[in-house]
Length: 386
Image (cartoon, rainbow, N blue to C red; front, side):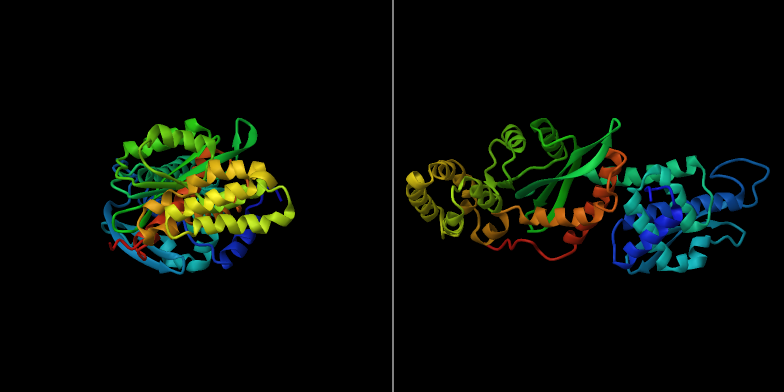
């Protein structure tokens, strides 16, 4: 089945996905439902807001807040009111067949990447309304504005910055290309983690990372004492340009993986992995550098390329020894961003190929908003006790 050609097929697939527990995009659903209820009220009144017309049947009278609790989260709705009539949105009367229809529509939004072309079908499914292209554009615009405000919100002081990227298939100029999703994570002075920013770029080239970092700084990011990431050349060059005085920690997990490419014999791989692991697990930097010197000497004759690589690269994974000992375990690798990447992949793979970079950024941002909000109200990530 071609994606988007059979709406019934979408519903069947979406229902299966929904039953498997897809969660997220709650804020997007709120925006779309609130907009759909406004559309429904306008049709009940036979007039849009502030429109003067002889066919108007009643007057709008503001909104009444209502929270609807579901297994996919609490929806904060603004229920449109009228002055004299008995208007009540059909969405709330039906209760969406309560959650089943909501979960299906939510899953569809994952599948479709909340594309403007498909929002009309979603709104019709949610509220039983036929909507115009203008209605769809208005609902999509509200969603995008909400996510854009989050991406551009002011930042402040963060002690630690963790960086990572993943690739999504996006249609660009008629071709499908692998586009880089750049994500920045921060840990604040209270030890709480946050998603600081996201960008969809053509690649991980320096120009894209550099623009991404400059945007973080322009939003107020300051106070960094350490940055953790992998060693992509474009990323490293951008860090030197934008954060030249901030110590950089190269992910130890990726260093261990990179080392294996320089091991000449399969029989040596376990031994080399243990030697590097002992360096990283040393009690302090002095001991780590002593073990590194031994390793470089040991492999100078039996594996000269490995010895040369270790001497040049392993020190980039030792920066973390200058940090609070309680913080070293979480900041010596990019494991936390990698876990988020797995969550992103689980959600974005449903869309398969995004119709545009904007569509990709919209979905990824909505997922990251929810992850970040969960962190901000959850447990402390790092203990800040001296």
